[in-house]
Length: 211
Image (cartoon, rainbow, N blue to C red; front, top):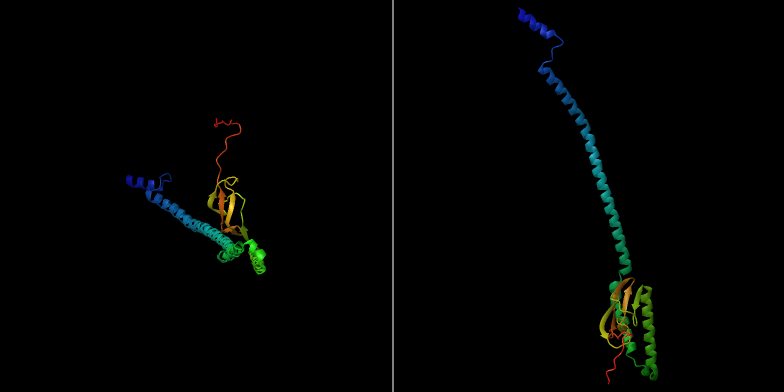
């Protein structure tokens, strides 16, 4: 009897701690609430990440579009400026032949033969008009006689000794060159002065070896 009363008293005592089953139930509720909050936050984070990705893709696409536009614009400008390169190279032979024809005529023959003189004058006028037409289309003739050699515009064919000119000076012009805008169409073929042996310094006394 006394044992039964003691058991009933323990059940109704407020100071008695809850059983393990009640603790497990509370923990489950807390875990479930955390799970619900996590599920509510995950869609927002996913959307933010997607926005960042789409923004990055948009910026890359805009940059690529701008690069393509600039490249196309540059190619169009080059086409306008240099599209006639091959044509001009081909017709430069005409200018060369006109000049060769004039150079082949002896000066005295032009004086003695009136018909030949008239023909030469006509060829000179044709050459002048032809070169003027090239200049109107930004084709510039390179005639560097007396200038220093420039490997960007000139092609050295040989060296000439004892010219009295500084080394590297162009002393002979075999064929003129041409530029189209700032692009070389054909280098000028030239002969270049060769450096003379160095003279002894002025302050060095000359020794007389004739004795």
